[in-house]
Image (cartoon, rainbow, N blue to C red; front, side):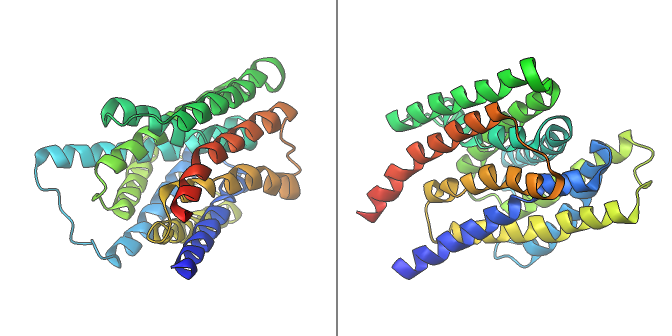
Length: 288
């Protein structure tokens, strides 16, 4: 049992570590956000569809119209999240985006309270307060210093969207996640293609970075994270999300010399602490 849990932790850490390069790849693509979203969605749709075809629930079908509508709603949420991430990274410091994104699990707790009637535990409530203080620090910094208020608004919308998506996936746990990611990618590609008539006017270098993102980074990261959930709890997986929050700004600093604002570091530290506050008791309880 111990070896299995260690294996799950290693898989989760590896998956989130790979995801941490996401913001860097968006920066390296160096084109309009709508173009990045198109290719990211298209390549992600193709690669995740291949993984879905190799999965055990590839024959899944909705049982009725209501389930189909809920499934379609989750796909739309996933597509919106994909776009919001790209647009947020393009219009604000990438460190801001990953810090704001890290609060999505707390928005999920809030949505679960209203939609699933799940009580919010005291430690989760404390973690939400601490994380939101961090968000206000990051968000307020854009009013006064960085001026990236639009990108931060995209980041907050991203966290809310992901929180709602996590809640829906919790309610409908039998939905095939890989198929959702795949179809949402195709949806993003279709929408961006309709609104940009220069979608194919890109360099080979840009196409290379976008291919790495859609065909290698996202599929491998999602595969490792999905597999890890078979061996460890969701609380333990969420704890590893701090890897992205801390590593994404480091990659941008190393490769592109993009230094995160000091207030973002402070706000991000609070969000990381909040994740530990929320996840550690569940992990310790399971160990005991």
